[in-house]
Length: 227
Image (cartoon, rainbow, N blue to C red; front, side, top):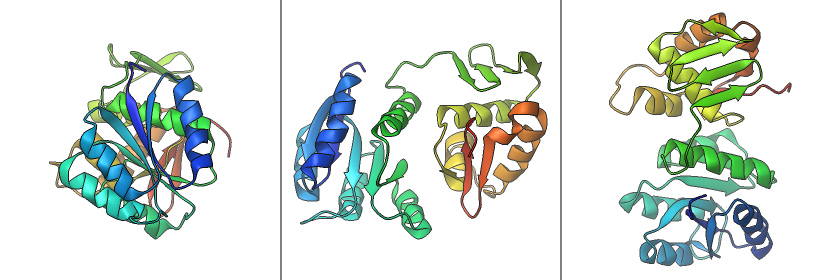
């Protein structure tokens, strides 16, 4: 992937190797650290790190403190790995600036797919102008959406929202994260505006309407797979 470098931070050598092997297959460069202190040393010394995979529970310095230190100087994309799955932990991660939150055990293939999606959003990996998922097809250059081959008329913001969902397929997205990504950080409206746009979007997507899943108390997830 254009020799992009990813830093894996986890105190379990086996876990680091598992993730590293999948990343190397996708032609990413990989750096490793066994704890937060080592991670910060490598992050400070290597200016080419494009993304950090960060475990929460580690000796010397845990993932939360490491995250806080990195966020003082960088907006590099960060994926948190944790054995915990409580909602308040995920919300804390988003508040501290986590881009994605992955609970162990996880599928390495899904993790790599999420990494690809994040780096596409950061314009680090070339993205196709056409995105397909199930019966939905988006042509980003032409600004056209088709459902089951038929063109669907969407507003500009509805189009942006749908594109964001497809580019983050299978990922749980908080309302705040959607708002900040689609409406940008300078928007001061209520995050519940997301619900209004999702309702309108669903009403226009026909057979693809049920791809947008509601995650109660958090936000939404886009998937064309039955759950």
